[in-house]
Length: 216
Image 1 (tube, rainbow, N blue to C red):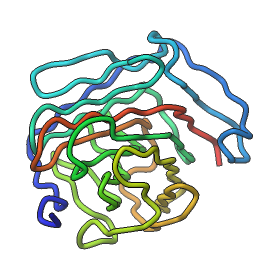
Image 2: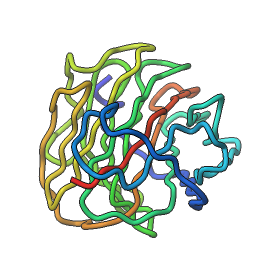
Image 3: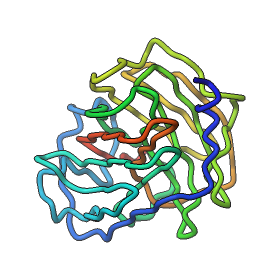
């Protein structure tokens, strides 16, 4: 199982949309003290995320959530609202709806026009990792392999993810517990978004809700 978690991926699908609108929410719900720079509960299908699909996967609105589905093994799909942020705190609720628990899903930050970014990933079987995507390769930062944690609610349970991209510090919180902190200074600003992927088993379907980007 850990071999799968090394993510040997060379072919990547990138789905990036244009911003047309955004939603505003009260800060108390998200538990962060700061200005909300962008927020979306995906209740409006014209809020800016791209609606696209092909034989490899799809990204689209679905009944008040945002769905990323991956049809191929060893394949990933990501999407973002085509914005630019510097230091951010990003939160989202995420759940595996369909597929094997040996999967990947989470948050991206500081995405470049070249599709290079940081990715904060968990799996529905209880593993996490912080990655840098560069030159069509995923490389772990501060870890040799994805690590297990009891902070992840496994299976078809909703997990609340928080990512801090502040200066060169990269932090991942899962359900309120900090599980990873590392440093990298490759990217200093860029887009924020969502990502999901299949490993050895295709047919991953991840649902996201309550996506918010805060100013630290």
